[in-house]
Amino acid sequence: MLVVANTFFRQSGSHGFDHTLRVTSLCVEIGKAEGVDMQVLIPAALFHDVTRPLEKETGIPHDSVRYGIFYSN
Image 1 (cartoon, one colour):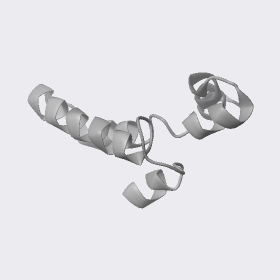
Image 2 (tube, one colour):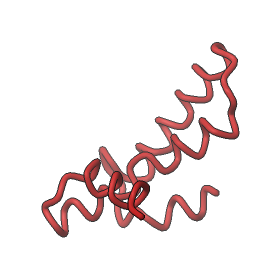
Image 3 (cartoon, helix red, strand yellow):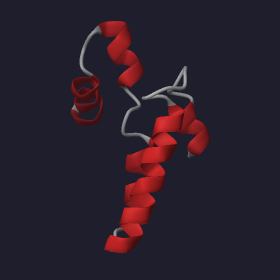
Image 4 (tube, helix red, strand yellow):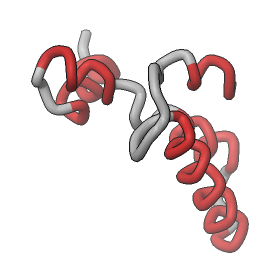
């Protein structure tokens, strides 16, 4: 899953793959304390910014692009 998530990012930086790894690590720590389903939490953390590179290319906010990808017919 890490390899697939990494393919979406072309660079490091504040919202590169290193950011995704930091977010995932924090989510795991909090998730363990809260007793959440890690099979849901970890993929959500890994893929939370996958459309961010499209934001730079298209100018469309990444959260709007993500909504269209996951909630379109």
